Amino acid sequence: MADLLRLLLRVAEKAANVARVCRQEAPLFQLLVQEKTGDDKNKKFVQDFKTLADVVIQEMIRHDVGAQFPEMASYIHGEESNKFENGLGERVTVTVCGTEKETAALLATVLDGDHTAASLLARAIHQDPATIDANTDGLTVPLSLSELGIWIDPIDATSQYIEGREEVLEEGRLSPSGLHCALVLIGVYLRSTGEPVMGVINQPFYYKDPAGGGWRGKHFWGVSCGGLNASSVPRPKDAPGGGLSVVLSSNEKQVVKEALTSLCGPDKLMYASGAGYKILCVIQGLADVYVLSEGSTFKWDSCAPHALLRALGGGVVDLTKCLQSSPGAPDQHTELTYHQPYPGGRGADRWANHGGLVAYRDCSQLRSIIAPLKGKL
Image (cartoon, rainbow, N blue to C red; front, top):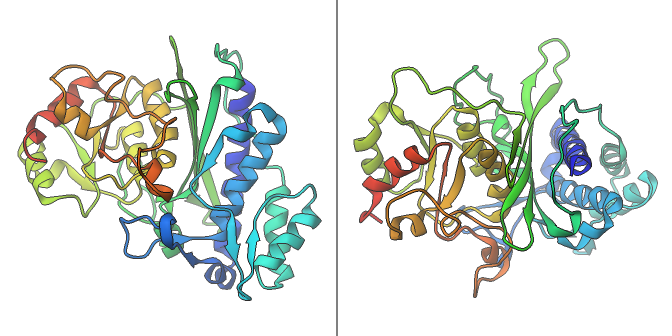
């Protein structure tokens, strides 16, 4: 399992490199954007985007993990369909080939014969990243790889990635939108129970070097299994002054905003883009809780950060189930799981977190949040 964690950190950094390469080539980036249609369209957004960067990253992670751990190959799931349409209307299945040259040739068919762009992408896909210092030595997890599955979100907060606004992050403060909201998310779950046991998050656009202009990323990881809880993130200290802080989507229901304003006060309600980034804010202690009342997130959004929160003593629960259950600590019934599709769902909808969610670090804070929402939704 320590080997798997090291591999996921490495492929997440490779994925971040691909994301950065795609943003550096603005004309190429415009060329890559395609609109999702049919069953794959995420209903939350009027216009949702699928990029070749998404597909390439997902298939690269699938290829690298499957190559090192073949027993997991059939249980690596992602947000994106790997079918892509080029300018000639030809449908191309995007995969990572055995060599950089072969991958470049395949990508050139997607990119309407743009061999320069295809070669640039293929080089990033096949290039090994710098060594990730993760301090995973001595980490022993009593699980077999044959018990595990993986969820990949190649670029969470795609709209922020495409818009590309650059923000300077302030230490200890949540920043609502911008490139830093775009994350690579890789979550590992138990096939038998759906319990999230390992998560890797890479933030490709964490810091821009003022000298060279290049972006540098930041990574986070967590493992929670049985009695083992380990994480790269220290457990955040409670903010001075007390009081709960909550992060929401800007288009959250008004009744939720009003109930939480009464509980926390208007100054403690914050807004941010990207489901993964909002849960990362809870992980880092930039917010205490993330509440979402709609079923607009998916298993690939929540699996990785859920594992990190579990390692810190928190979790991610189904909001609807919490509101229907008796007061008390969350149990396995209310925590999100990742192994079964939603009955009757189609396309991406099969893997939606239909009951909404609450991400939290502390059970007492979760109870405080649930109480004022009962009877309101």
